[in-house]
Structures are given as C-alpha cells and as structure tokens.
Image (cartoon, one colour):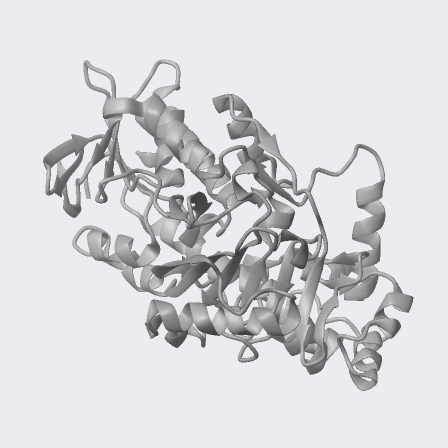
Length: 471
C-alpha cells in the first residue's frame, strides 16, 4: 500500500478508469476544481459514453441505452443545466400491465405501482378478486420488527401484499428497473422507501397514500422522467467535448501497481502515474484490476454480479403512430412475452423525425430471461412484433428494426448490497476510489450523484484536506 499522499510541486494528477457518464462526470468535476486538478480518463472503447449511444433505425436516431433519467433526483437535471442542455418531460403518461386479457392500465394514483386508493385496488382488473383481497390485508398485518435488517424486495412485497400482486403487478415494474429477480434484490439498495413506509405507516398502501399527499403539497413535483433534447447521449457527448484531450480512447487498462506515494496504471496506451485513481467501471471489472493491490475487497466486488439485457427497436410504417396509446408503455410478468417491458417511444418521446410512424422500444433479457439474447436478431424481432400485434392494432412486421445487446451490463443489488458497497469503499487502499452503477444506483441521475460525491472525496484527498484521516 502506498504512503499517504504528499503534495508535489505540480498540480496533483488523477486517473479515471472508465469513460461512461460516471467517469466523465468525475473528470469534469476534478478539472473544474479550484485550483484545477490534472485528470485523465481512460476509456477502452473507441468512443466515450459507455452505454449511452444511439443507433439508426429506418433513418431515425434512436437510443440504444437509457432514453431518459429520473427527474425527481435533481443531479442529472442540474448537470444538464450546467452543460447548457435543454430537457423535456414526457408527452404522455400512464403505464399498462400485460395480462392474459390484454393490456390493463395501472391506476393513476400509485407509488411504485402500489395503489394509494382502496377503491382503485378493489376495482383493478389486473388481479383476481382473491389477489386484491390478499393485497388489502397489508392494511392490518403487523409490521416487521425494527432492526430486523435487510430483506429482499420480493420478501417485503410478498409479506405485505401477497404473491399474486408481487408476481403479476409489482415485480414487472420494480424488478425490471434493475434487470433482476425481486426475490434476490436487496430492498434497501433498490427501493429503501418501501421499508420506511412499513416502519412509519405500518402499511405499504398507507405509505403510498402518504407519499402522494406529500407530493401534492408545496412546490410542484418534477416529472418522474426527464430527457435532454437529443437524448441522454447529448450529456456524455458534451462532457467528452469539454474534457477534450483529457479523455483517452482505446486505452484498455490491464493493471495497477503502487508507485512511490501514488499509483501507476498500465494500459494498452502505455502507463500513467497518478496520485489517485478512480475506478468508474463495474464491480466485476474492478475486482479483476484490483486483485493485486486490494485483495481484501475482491470477494465483495465479485458479490455484485451483472446481468445481460437488450433493446429491440421497432419502427413501423407511416400512418401507424395512432395505433399506439397515449402513454409510456407496458411491463410484462416474466415468462409471458419475450419482452420485459415496452416503451411507446412515439407517444412518450415524440420527435419530428418519426413522422406518423409508430416507434417502439422493447426491453429484453434480465435475470432468468438472458437466454432471449442468444436468439438471432430476426427471431427476436419477429417474436416481439407478433406479441405486440396481439394487443395493439399494429402490423405484424415493422418496417425497420435493430437489436442491441448489453452483455453483463446491469449490476444486481443482492441482499446486503448497501453494507457490501460500504465495506468495499472502506477497504480500498489509500488513493483508490470506486463509483458507478455497481455502487451508487443504476439510473443516470444516481450515477451523476455518485460521481459528484466521489470527485469531492478525491479533491479533498489530493489537496490533503483529509490528511488527518489518511495519515
């Protein structure tokens, strides 16, 4: 382990491994520190941005990764404002559930898919009568004892609302955001609001009621989802442009070693000496790179596995836009369709380039469904389009399509994830930091927040603001 950082004559130097939105945000924050910090971001690919990129389908540029971010988490919106990027809110709202009887719209008064109105719960056709009655028992069931610790998201939902509501109504929405099985995901790492509702309100339904009441008070609530004009790639493109030569593409990092009071990174582009190193990559990659210098955290890093997902982008012919309802899209229970969900892009994020064409985006893969990604592109497109034509008045074949696979792309926040991430950060050698989707949250806003917090910790370290802590 190197000695605590000692200031040299020149500006301190920081190396950032990873050129996705997390790494780029860290790098820009450090560059803008006062006084500035010399920073280099090493990205193994031939472009920056990571999973934020677009593909052309039928002459339209469509998002191949995230198409928006959470507007109620301010960090990404504030970054867009800082970069001079205008944002827009959805043109339509409302989410549907895929059922055997067709698409059923979720009640409008819900929080995380949990209805706040008992009338909506008892009338909603997405569940059987028995399923609705079991869910209503949430109002009278005893709450879990304080201090019982983390539990899986599925365990909480099943205990409070029952198996049917969990499997058919809530898992498709909540689990889909994390590409995971709700019975494996940590509730404290994914939706910590839910156990807080149980502790404070004694019920998830009453917690949803309180959350919606609070949202209606005071200042207007920001939209749930926000999108920069031009899509999320506009953020990473602008970050990379402002960093310029500080971003080095095609630099695949292969190792790290202690060097004096700092570190030396070996990559395909040579070597880089740095006072501090930020690993803005997934936990599994970080485990591989840190094995020789931080073996005490490798097991915990490997305990944050990834799952593979994909996007199927469909563009239909002119005159088909009206076949898609005015809404965000639908979610599907696992095993019912080849899709985990479908976004009605032409309804929720309309664009002049669409003309009168229906544009849809289907999410595939995820825990327990990764085998869908192994099929040929035309087989995947045919299966998705056939299922869509069964519930929407769309042609059975789109005019244009694309399948994008993201192998090992989404981290799975398993039971005990919050404590695991804390142990990793506490156990890292002095001068090494981690951030990104494996640790801070899977959405863009969470990544920006984690990057900003990490940049401040790095700034304090290299400026010796926390010398007492590290000496």
